[in-house]
Image (cartoon, rainbow, N blue to C red; front, top):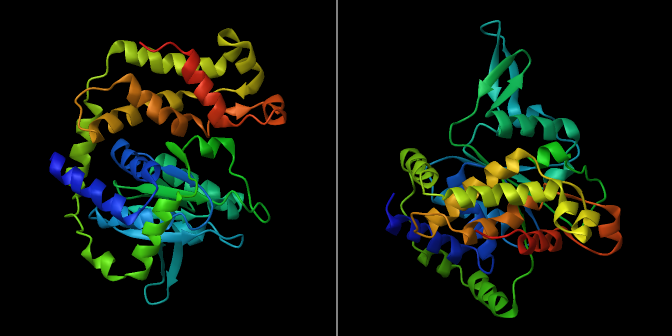
Length: 318
């Protein structure tokens, strides 16, 4: 994949999604690191717009699923339908059989629906009755959560959260960006003027993922990733205060995610090697949904981002 093609895609996404550089980079990292992402933020921050813009850049199908309390697993996976003319059951595929899925307000659906999505994310397949069906090879889920409303929601279990490669936390844009958003919203002609890049084929995308995975990573940097992960499991050995804040550390999936995301970020930035900066840049989004804080941390008003930043300060950089 040529650097010019990647630059065009980045520029298009940045023009379509104003004031959310973390979201744009997170989408690209998830795409090239072959993982799923959870996006949490107040309404109106262009979460849906961002994944739709990403779908414009890829030769693949996009589908949005609005999660609600009355949703059933079959509404995602599909179901067997009896064909009277043949006297047999025929499987009718559901919306999960698309390449890019937007799971909007995922925490509004009950546990059975979440577990169906979990199987699709983790195994690349769905099971209906006694049969399993493979999902498309190119399969990316972007799930969203609204942190404002908790009524009528079903918190995602820790095991499912661990399946997400990244957890992005969004905030409102600044005043200057808000003015740009107003200009863009009132002038529909600006939308058509944005040069949509030539969509990536599946072959090009898989080739880009392979290139990212082959980037050079020094052994010392691999040890640094492991040191960060181990520090979440035995924080008291590193710092007494950190030990009081952290109740539960991250799983080996975090090590894999740190490496893959750091490689993808380095590749996106046009380098042929991974630097400590890449690891530190992706660490908050990789670790945020995997660590569990203690009651003491919550009582002191310490959030996960503060814990991760302290972790990055204490673990020696190679």
